[in-house]
Amino acid sequence: MPSASNPITSSPPSLLPGISPLAPGALPIGELLKGLHAIPDSRAQGQVRHTLSDVLLTALFAAIADCDDFIAMGIFAQTQLDWLRQYVPLIHGAPSHDTFRNVFMMIKPSALLEITSTWVGSLEGLHVRIDGKVNRGVKDPESGRSRLHLLRAWVSEVGLSVGQVACDEKSNEWATLPELLGSLELKGALVSIDAMAGHPEAAQMIHEAGGDWILALKANEKEAHKVVCARFRALCGQDAELPAGQLPKGIAPAKTLHPLEVAPREWPAGVSYSKTVEKNRGRYEEREVIVLPVGDWWPKAYLWYGIQSIICVIRTTLRQRQVGEQPVQEVHYYLSSLPPGDARAIGAAIRKHWDIENKCHHLLDVTYHEDRYQVRDRVCAQNLTLLREISAKVLRDHPRKGSIRSKRKRAGLSASFRAEVINLIFHNPHA
Image: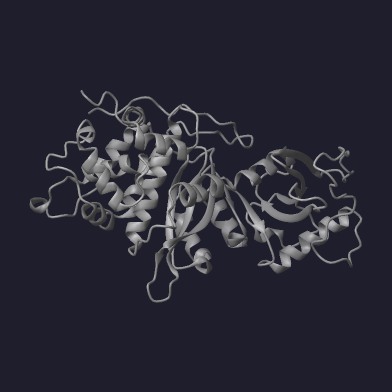
């Protein structure tokens, strides 16, 4: 069964000048087959009924068809055996749920990660989002706490992880970050990380790897946070004795869902300012982005390797849930190695960081019910997470309109639609 030769054709717009949507070396989807066949099988070959690639492909098809756990995979294999044999031999019949479990406990997550990272291709010109996620289904039976916390490097433009490292708990994310960054080729990439990595050491690691960075700055870096807050207050004429983090003067709370547009306030020369307003489904959000160049006002800025920009994002949000509800205002600070000239582009990149929550973590929790199914083995749980990512990527690439959830339901109920999705992996499967 030869692999497909058609390259990925989706081309989302660039986030920043010089940040291209997809690397030219990204693998065609059909190359997934080669990766699955290349995974080493450590089982005793004379004592197995199914090849490793047959089991993994069947599990992938089951995940596409709305089967989330090993029992559901076993039922899918039994009931769809004739259909499956169009794509995988399965000469000894359908794999059982125990076979699926044993295989996912046996293979190393690095083998599946190699497939996803090779599929993404070069990271040059791409935006890599790094964030952690707890798998609540992997519980310690004694303490009841989760035993698997994954720190993930996610490329939203492709929809796959290029790196994952398991840590014991959220407090260990910072200790795990160097291992994750060290596993990535970051030359020419843009890396964004939330408050967990708001430290000079993270900037140094990314800068020395040849990448640009955007790091959230919060109170875990007390001195830097205090200096940056004071600088923004001074620029807008605010009394320096007011509490740190208070909004600059001139921001009027939104009274309705459709407030009058107000011209942006005047900022000193060299300051880049952008304002966007979004009104959608009873929700109003105003985002102001102010970007400053690094100057003599911050003597210790040199600690942050490659730093060029200091960013303040002011969010004013109002949801029309009840009469008299007041808007909520938040202030967030960021440091970046990007040049300070384009506040709109930098603001868009900051907002795009949260694609990892919307398109990955939320998808795994809500569409694949990852936290619902209890898997005691950490390796097994991480392999299942990667399988779900791959199945979501295959479904997302299918041209039919609709959510991943609706496509999974349709693939489970319709063999013809399932075949359309599978044919994205197999080119002329009957050859």
